[in-house]
Amino acid sequence: MAALLPHISRPVFRKQSPAAVQVMSDWPDIVGPHLAATTVPRRLAAGTLTVACSGPVAMELQHLAPAVIARINTTCGQGVVKRLRMIQDLTMTPRPVARPAPRTAPAPVQIDDMPDGPLKEALGRLGGWLNASRDPKTRQ
Image (cartoon, rainbow, N blue to C red):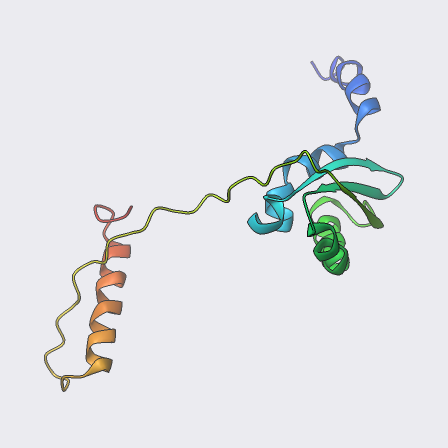
């Protein structure tokens, strides 16, 4: 099996390097959900990552380029990306950002040895959330 693997993977890696594949597949984790919803990495060649953007996101990405490059190089290896090239893709529609379903608040914990007030209420609610996080039946 080990002898066959280089022969199988060589044609694939001629088309795209392993670093490019990792950038493409890990893009939402690298840039975060906000930018991943409006950008798509298109090509990585000679240290330049071409990123398609929708609307005015190219300017935002240009300002964030040093941080994005640092995050890519931290994830994929030092020196993989040296610069970003932004292209506007007007056909690309923004993808909706997945948001978690709202959770119902658990019952607050009773605190008897404290005077009534907003602090007691806040601590009771916090205690309820802590108890719910420890109890696997109440997790959502």
